[in-house]
Image (tube, rainbow, N blue to C red; front, top):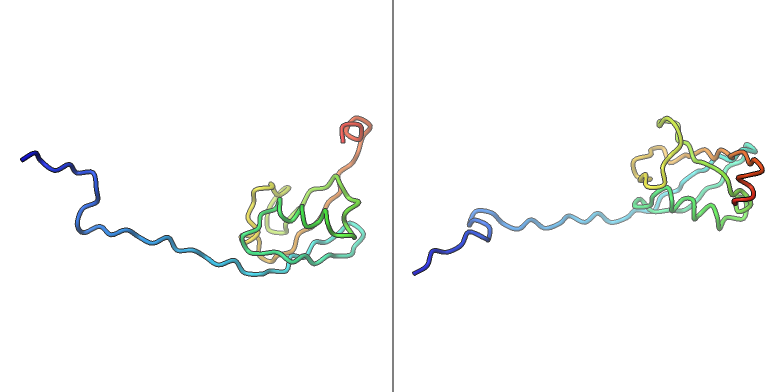
Length: 107
């Protein structure tokens, strides 16, 4: 008889089930430059790009097109791929970017 190949897992190893985390509804507060704030409804698996999409459809912020988001515990602007779940408290600050003639034409 030919020897058996060792491709599979050993007898003692069992297949681990992937633990799936259910998303939880969260309130995301965005402080606007005019000292007002907007509360967005999101889920815990959202990213910053999802918050940007929520801001685009919100009537109070749909006119703001050139902006970046800041968080009080992180330095600098938040990247679009950052997870919302890691940002506690869920409070972001919207900072408007400045338009110059070239960037306005490109936009």
